[in-house]
Structure formats: structure tokens, C-alpha cells
Image 1: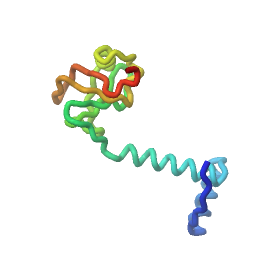
Image 2: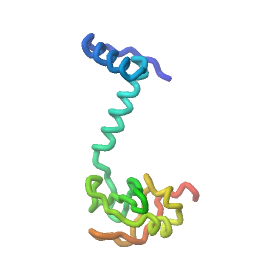
Image 3: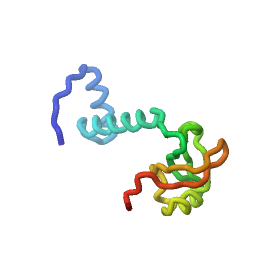
Image 4: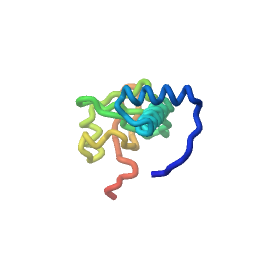
Length: 122
């Protein structure tokens, strides 16, 4: 673990210390928690870039995969049957989130012909 010195205003330190105490954490652990939480939130608000003809499965909810493409942003992902993507790509459905695929046919309401990109099994 890297150690470094951080200078912050006294009033900000007091707020962090009070929040840490309320959360039953040390100040150091609480600052790490806040940094990780902030970085995760930043990553979620940053738009994902997906090349034409490709797709990224953000997550699966039940039997539905939420898919980002050049035509379908993170705010309005394309929703498709997860099992269909899994069958076409040769993966278990629970392995879909976070994976990128080449897509043979992509429309506003559907996509088909999923092939896994950067397959670590190859």
C-alpha cells in the first residue's frame, strides 16, 4: 500500500472525522471508502464508447441483458434475452456482464449474431 501526505482544510477534516465515526470506521478507512465510492460514481456517469458493430453487456437482470451499442447509450440500453446472446457467443449467461461482442445485425429494437471479442479462452 502506498503512503502519502494529504493536506486538507481543518473544517473538511472535521467533517470527514465525524462521518467516519458515525460509520464506525477510522478516518483513513473512511477516506478510502469515500474515494472508491467517488471513483465508482464517476465511472458510471462517464459515457461508454462502443464501436459500430459492437456491443457491451452492462448487466443482466433476470433473463434480460442490458446492452450498450453505438446506437444504445448507457442511459437507454438495448434489452435482449441474455440466453440468446450466451448461446450465440458460447458462454454461460452469468458470464455476459462486462463482456464486449461483435454483432452481425444491429437495429434499434434488436441485435443478433453475437461473437465474443477478446476471448480469454483462446
